[in-house]
Structures are given as C-alpha cells and as structure tokens.
Length: 327
Image (cartoon, rainbow, N blue to C red; front, side):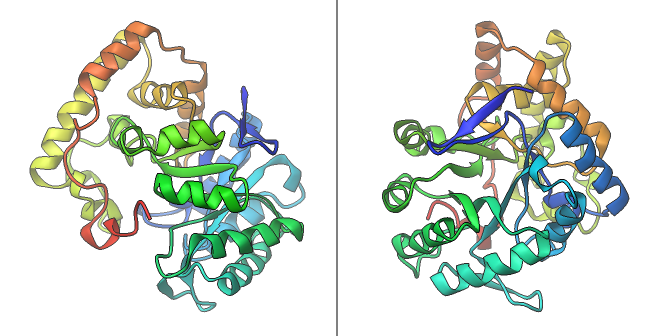
C-alpha cells in the first residue's frame, strides 16, 4: 500500500486506514475474535492508521486495540480522541476541552491502549466553552512530554482550524467526507487544509455503509444500530438517497469494481486518507482493494454527475448532535 504524510512533522501512514469504532459500539452485535482477526489482517495488508476514541464503548474499543497490538505496538499508528467527556465509570457527560480533562483523559487512554504514547491525538469535538487555544495548548504540552507524537482536531470550522494550527501544527483534521457528505468542499475547510498543509482523514467514507450497496431498506439495521436514528436513513430521505446509491452501483459495475471500492477510490483521489470502519475481514479486504483502483477523468465526471454536492438529502446526524459539528 502506498503511504501518505499527514501534516508537516512526518506522520506517515498507509493511504487507507481502519476505523475501529464499530468493533465495539453503535453498529449492532460485536465479535471480539473476528475484530482482532480483522485488525491483524489490516496490518498484514499495509493498513497502519488505526482509529479509536475513549468514547467508543466507552473505553472498550481502546482496550480491544491495545489487546490487538500487544507485542507489536510499532506496527501501527494509533489515533485516539478526547473531548467527548467520559467519567471514569463510563458515563458520557457532554463536551469537555479543558486542559485538566485532556491530560486526565490521555493518561487513561494510554492505560487502556497498553502503551506509553499515542501517534495522533485528536480533539473529538470542539468545546464552545473553552477557547481552542487553551485546549490545543494542553495537547502541545503532551507532545512536549512525549506522550503524544502528533495532534489533530475533528469536525472543526475553517476558522477554528486556523486558530488551533497557530498554537501547534496540526497533523490532521478528521471529518466526515464521502460522496454522501461533501460539505468541506464548500465551507472553507478543504481549502484551509490545503493552504496550511494539514492532512485530511475522512471518516464514514462509505456514507455509514449506504454506499456499499448492501443496505436496501431501513429494516436491514439491527434494533440497536444507531443508524435507525440517522435522518438520511429515514422516510423519503432513504428512498432519495438510495437512488444515488443505485447510480454509484451502475458506474462501479461498468468499471468492474464494487460500489464500496468506487466510493473509497473517489475519497482517496481527493487526497484524503479514508478510514472505513468494518469489523469483518472480508469487508476489510474489499475496502483495501480500493487502493488499487485508478479513476480516470471520465470516471470522475460520471461520479460528479450522479453524486454532486447537495445530491443527498437529510442531516447527517440527529438534531441533538448537529450542534456539535463545525465548532
């Protein structure tokens, strides 16, 4: 797998990473044995950026990743996140970007991961009650202490990215980016990242699984799958968005690839490191094969025609979570 450098301070990772969240939370039943085998297979295939967060579980996903990397920590670039506050007993408590919480959360994450450093430490969401300069100042101190090698922010506005980067160089900004979510092309974020030399890490590059073509009805979701509350998977939005998926499938079939591979190849063509989430080896192998797909100018034009900005209907989160975006 080809490598890409995130930021200006030498964080080099495989051009496709792995989102580990679904192995422990939010997407129905989990299987630790298969999850561990999936992480192992990812490393074999050249996937090095493994993404988790303290809030996934909470804590369970970090512990799973620590178990997977026992005895081979240097094989992976571990990314985890803070700022979506979790109490020590596992209760979610809103946003918290205060320096004292950031320091406490990192030490806890290091214990769960079974390591003494994190390769990439993100602020998961921007806390509006704390100036970004204070939070990033604390992250910078953790870099100086050797506990963190690189820092980033998630779902931040262009202005916040600039303010954060002025305090300490950001290696990456993680945000949702896919054929289903192209907002950063129009709100100044992508332009800012290119100007400042900050890497783009794209989560949900398959539109939360919609672009895989495997979801044809809301009934495909398990009862405890959080996507049942996602506006894009509800009512008329589902039907309209499924029409977009059908067009993506048509283009993929003509090219001889799967819809997932076409969608991932498009994200990677934009210069992003995609971190598709999966908890099964067979989907991982399908996703990684997208790194071998080359899109021609004709392919890009065809994709643009069926999935331009604004083609997808519905907010990308339920109302109570939309306010945490673009801080």
